[in-house]
Image (cartoon, rainbow, N blue to C red; front, side):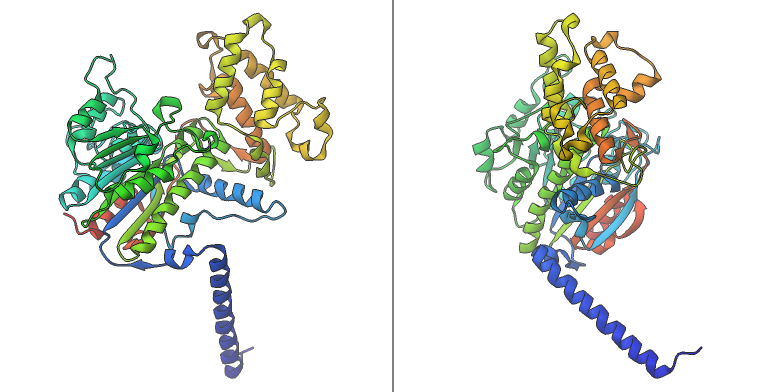
Length: 510
C-alpha cells in the first residue's frame, strides 16, 4: 500500500529529530567520557606543520581490539563492552595492505621501508629498492630538506628494522653496526628509547657508534634526570632509556616499575627537543607489541598496545594547542602471531579477566626459570618446585590445591590436559637447548621459545579465549587511524606504500 505523502513527511521529520537527539546524546556522553573527543574530531586540509607517525609493530585489528576487550572486561566485568583506545576514536580510518616484494607475510624491514619511502623491497632490506642497491628518498629526508626537525623513537633498539627505515639504508637489517653509524649522518635530530645491539660491531672491535654520535654533536644520555630536562635548546639528542630489558629494548609495559620512563615520556621529550618554527616529524614505534606476538604472550602484547595509546595521547594533547597544523597517524607495519579473539576450546565465549592474573612478561619469567636452573641440579628438578611461582605470576593452579575450590579461581584451575602439557614443557625447559627434541610437534608447541614460559602463556591465553596461528608474521592488512591536518587523505583502502605517497602529497613535497 502506498504511504500517504503527509504521513511520510511527518515520519521523515520525526526521524531527523530522533537522529539529532541521538547525536546530542552521543556528544554529551563523549564529553563526559573524554574532553578530547571534540578536538579529535577536527580535520583540516592544511599542510601539516607537525607530523606524528605512530607504528605498532606487529599490530593489526585483533591486537587493537584485544586491548579494548581487555580494558572493557576489567572496567565493566558484568557487561560485553569495549573500553575504546583513544586513537580508535580518530575521525578518519583507513586500511593498508602489507605485502612486500617477496612475501605476503612480510617482515618489519620491508614494511617500514614501504611506509618511510614508498617502495616495495625484499624482506630484511632497509631503505633500498627491490634491487637492493638504489636508495629512495625517505619521508624524513624529504622533510629535512624543507626545514623540519626529525625524531625517531622506539621501545626496541634504535638500530632495529622499523626505526632504521626512517634514517638508514642497508641491504641487511642484521648489519646493526652499519645501521647504527648512519644515525649520526644528520637526518634525525632526536632519537629516543632503546639502546644499540652492536655499537662496536659484530666482532666488538669497531669504533663505538655512540662515540661517533657524540663527535657529530649529539648529546647521548641514559640519565633519567638529564632526559627529563631536555628542551629545544638541547641540540641533537640520543636519549636512551635507563632501564633496558632484552636485546637493548625498553621494558615490556607489564614489567615496568614505578618511575621507569615509558614510551609516552620519550614522545613528550621529543616534542620539547624538536620544537621550532619550521615544524617537525616524529616516528614512534611500540616495537614489543611484535615481540610479544612472536612469543604468543597476549598480556604483554595488550599492555604494549596500551603503552602506544598512552604515547598517542601525548601527541593529541599537543594537537589541541596546534589543531590546524598537526597530523597524527597511527598504524601497524604488519600483523604478528595470527592472534584471534576466540579459539577452539572456548567456543563463543571469552574471559579476558583471566589475563589480569599474569604479572610479568614471558621474558621476565624466563629469568626466573634460569635462576631455578642455575640453583638446581638437573636430576633434582621437579615441576612442583615451580608451581608456587606459576600460581603467583600467572594465577594457574592444580585442582588439588586448597584455593582451587574457591569460586573466583574456577577458571584458573589446570585441567589434566593442561597440567600434562606443563609437565612436558618443564622437562624440555630443563634440558640444554642443544638436547631438546626437534621436529614439527615441538616447533608448533614452543616455536623456539622457552618451553615452559610459552606453554604458560598459551594456557592462560586459551582460557581467556585467545588463539594464535603463528610465531611469525601474517598477511593481514593493518588499520590506519588519522586526525588533524589533511587527515581525510588517509581514509579508504590502499597499500602501505601509499602512507608515504599521501604524506608526500599533503606536505607538498617532490
